[in-house]
Image (cartoon, rainbow, N blue to C red; front, side):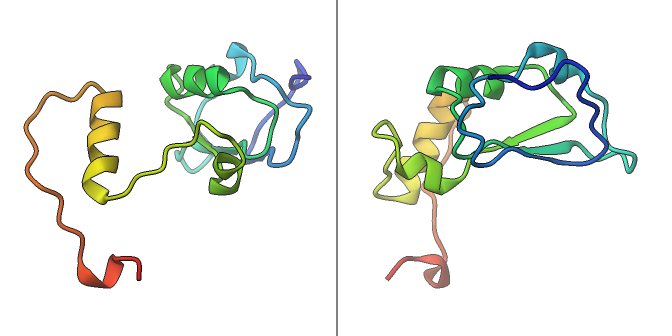
Length: 115
């Protein structure tokens, strides 16, 4: 299932738990910003959008849309990334973003560390 062709968006779009939703057509990527100039938040956790579809959305030219996938959705999928340290997570995302700039060690404040 997909979104209707005549969908108009004034604010944010909450599609969490729409498990029949399998795609977001490219025609929606050109939506302009909200009335306040901010991008629309599009929540797509627990939908039927595949990992390939999420990658496509992450790489799409959609400057006025911010896509959000919940941690609960990621935990239900075997290909979720499980990082053992902040440095490991940063390294993964830097590689994903193809960032070649040098980066020193990542220090996590004591108050932010998990017990």
